[in-house]
Length: 349
Image (cartoon, rainbow, N blue to C red; front, side, top):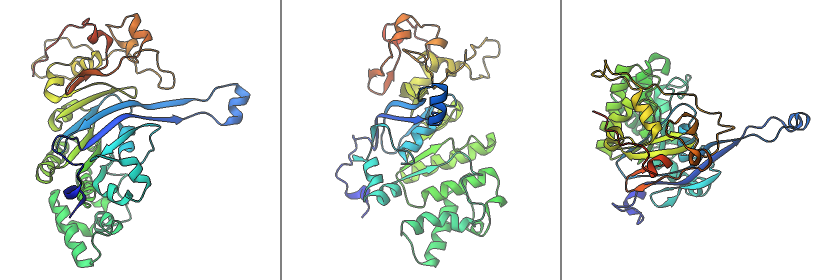
């Protein structure tokens, strides 16, 4: 009997994944002597600053935003590659970071796996595919018999659209899309419940992206997997997600069900991102470009971090940081939305 079968914390209403006020700060200061000689203070980078969300079992939450907004740091916090500076991450009712540091580490790591962005860097070029996919099975002591191990690796490769014969090859003998399938097979080896996918298709051609995404959706349906899907491609997000969170400079500025966010975006930054997507039937309409640059994360503006780029910003926006407010599945961190200063815009599908 597995953990998921007998854990009393599991229930249909309780989310499988809950992040609460998750934060990660990096000290990027120059060496102590340089700081003394140049009279510079310590430099702290708030990569993730108070992010909270929930994911129900079998669902997909997508995190989107420009490069450097903290999406990948959130992913690494959830799989235990980083320790949080503040906040908590609960998985199936348990404190995941306490489990990572304690005796439950192996059990937690079996249940949570990650698919990395670059299929060229995440596979050991000196290992055969058999060894790459079998490594989690051996590491977690799931299969020790050599024949059973080979059979299981073949089954995993077949589940992602590859052939069992491919296990005798090296990664360099595969295309980018095939390598990413190998990465997915490796992630599935421990029969996880939660997959953290850090831009798993961004390094692939568009046609190959579609194949990999369809495989991931099929696997989710068959194995009832839960995904955190990180991407900067809104077209991909629209295809795979149930809920979407929009990040800006380490904070969530809006989170809503997919249909709601794409049809009725509320935060000015979300609107800006959606307006920048080329649409086939809007060839005659002038689009609003994404204005301005992302501020320096080492020296973010006071108040709302988006205020230098926002057409609705006022004095309150420049001095007071907005909180993520709302009811149910739709929440937004924006003073202008809270005060009703932004007109409702319906985006055609």
